[in-house]
Amino acid sequence: MTGFIGALVEAWAEIRIHRTRVLLSLIGVAVAVAALTSVVGLGAITQQATTESYERQSGRPATLFVSAYNVATGQTPDAKTFSTAFTEVTERYSVDWTTRSTYTQVSVDFVDGVTPVDTTLVDVGYGTMHRVQLVQGSWFVDGDDQRLAPALVVNETVWKKLGSPDLRTHPTVTLRGSSDVTAVIVGVAPDMPYAQDYPTMFMLYDSFVGIATPQQVQQMYPQFEAWVPVDISQELTELIKRDIAGELGEGWQVDVSRQDYLVYQGDDPLLPIKLLVGGVAVLVLLLGALGLVNISLVTVRQRIREIGIRRSFGATAGRVFFAVMMESVVAAAAAGVVGVFIAVVVVKNPTVVEFIAPGISDIPAFPLEAALIGLGSATFVGALAGLLPALVAVRVKVIDAIRY
Image 1 (tube, one colour):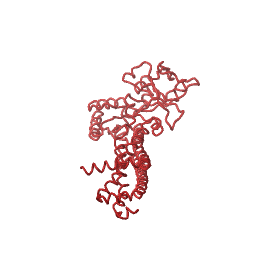
Image 2 (cartoon, helix red, strand yellow):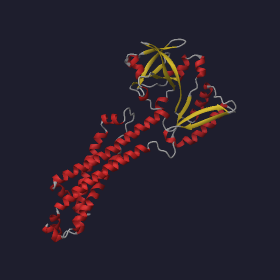
Image 3 (cartoon, rainbow, N blue to C red):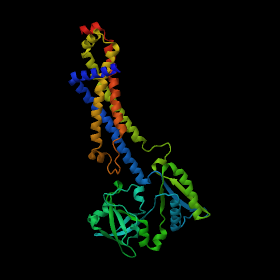
């Protein structure tokens, strides 16, 4: 232990003596570690953004999609009957997050005329299950389906066509149909990248049923979804399938399946991102190690006479080897700390996050593994870069080194 501490003290003293050389080597290592750690940290943000994108499309893991049909006729059950059975069964197993969803068109009265707007009919839970983003306002809440004036969540295109009203004033819009209905806008969702300037909106399923004609209601058949814990999803799949079939009666086939991104067995949808991040990180690390090796070799060549004098005064080969290596390790570790700090500043910068993952909802904390990888890589690179110079220092003959 005394020898180890002595080697550390000696390494630190050498670093202080050779400030300029150490500074040059630290710059290279710090930049490499900062790049490596930033890549890992930004990779975590990119992975989170990709995960959220998948969840907006097919729901969070594990989302069960439930459907049924008559074996003899191939017809689907009445929407109201199936909805009742679905609600009873999910409540029986304490499934807190469920939703119905379907699509229709609602005519909206704008300043430039009446325009059909694609409308997604959902339940309150849909917003959480599919990570619906809002640029302002709020999502539906329990009780909104009892409003006399239905609540709407419109996209930015609809909001701008209405003159971008302040939602605090509870702006209204007229829905045209067999009888005109006044609706209240409670939230604004961003336009989809693939459908810019295309008007869309969300409306609660039961709110639409309250204003729709019997013919419209009869033509509607929603998709039923339930968000359940991943670890019991398989068990709940069988139970929900069995119980809903029992509720519907003989002759009905019930299908329950998962379609979220985690259901792909043996095919990780995030694997390309992980491989890309890993490849860039390894490349950055190798470049940093190469630069440090070159500087360390030059340094040892300059210190050959000093090493020879220390050997002549009794320094063992092991002590010289360890001292040279530890100098590189200590310098690299110090550079690693600086590099990790720079990476934290970069990764947590709001501008960088918005550029890498625009629209991300849950920005992950700076990953601890990124900091550990950065510090560990710096130490490893320091040891690797110090190994070859240390071997060169040990192999130098004392008399030749003194004459150098």
